[in-house]
Image (tube, rainbow, N blue to C red; front, side, top):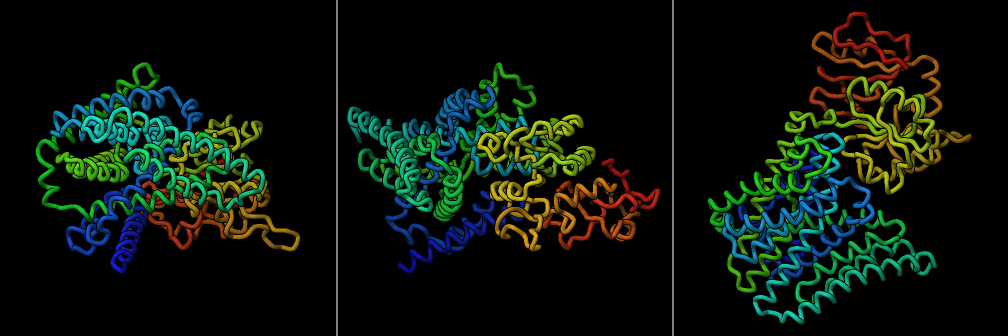
Length: 611
């Protein structure tokens, strides 16, 4: 028991530690997880999953994969598919089957897998990994259309690969004589009915229970989690390994229900998925036999990877997007970017064990090939997406941008200045008239409620590293920052200073809302009054001849630093500026009195922005 507890704690520590290091240094998480897993397992022997977990290893991995696939099913919303572009729908509906067919041929003829492992592995590799794609899009600062294509493809097609793999595994069981076809057909129908019916009943039950007050809100997530585990176990009792299919369908059914606050459920599942995906990946990596892995990755495996990268993915995208209004450079770009995620390794490891147990010897190769595919695609696409986007003119400017919620005189003046500096900016407001000045200045705008589900999926968040809630309503600003904090980052959601009450106290607790914008002068009224008094935005590029000392000397004591764009192109605002001294190469945007003129002719000082 002590060994088991130690193993679980060690896996959690290594997995989350790797995730944090990946976030801190802006590296693909899967690469860090791979290194840590190898060091903890084959390299040092510190973690030995087979000895620690024994016969529990396969069931634990199965349960973890079941929850991961359920979370993927939750993201597949049919209304969202109908609302996406023609190109996205074609990538999912046409590109998926084409990629599967080409992938199966590649795995069978080039990779040397036997028929059933080839079909199952091709199904797993149909989709890209949203856990890898979305962070890459944020780092690369792609233009809106190619970023939207890659993001939606990853989200909407996420459960498709697992569904294909499960169905072909069931077909293998029939052909191998493990099950009668009539019984399997009946059980597949029962499994689908359990998933669809369970999702529908669970949705209706939760809606009625919450409306009627029979179940408290805090039990919503636990009830759903227990229902998923129960459906997985019950389905496996009806049909061996059909639980994965059932929970995926259950997720799709629940994701298309009308349950209020489903976003809360999705966020909890995302947190669970991070823990489980990290843990499963560490387990799989630590269980590797390096000698067997090297033996499996032969010349045929190398040829398989090359065909996957340069033939299967590009050809499937080009075929799927025929007739779409997309330039060839965008089609080729999307056809190149297809990193596979940790889920591919987890699912491949599960089916590898099942196939080997059924006497399919080369089923064990799925794990090695999955590791190779994930590592090669993450490295190749992760390090090339930025340079290729800039080369093809598909970059949104690099370094992130600012999403402003609330069209006010101050926010529009700020947006005009950012646009002049070629820093991505977008102004969102639910009042059409308030956006008129922004539209007249050719500033990108979003008309609508940013708290709606439509906005959550239509706003190109990957182009913006910061959000500023700048409306005249403190409560609304607080709600916007609280809602988008998990998506953009708690330290990256800012709001104009919360106004004080008559007693001089702030109205909201510090755990809600965003970080205060521009300190004491950052209140809504204060900012707009200062704008009327003639305060202006000034951008200063620091150089060897005009550095931080000269800049500090020339600026007004009342002026506040709005943001900094570093020499490397990274955008810094809010808490990131605290205690930081500007450096040579930085572009510093300040807001201060008009009288605070910098010395004329000072090197690196740009002309002031007109308010």
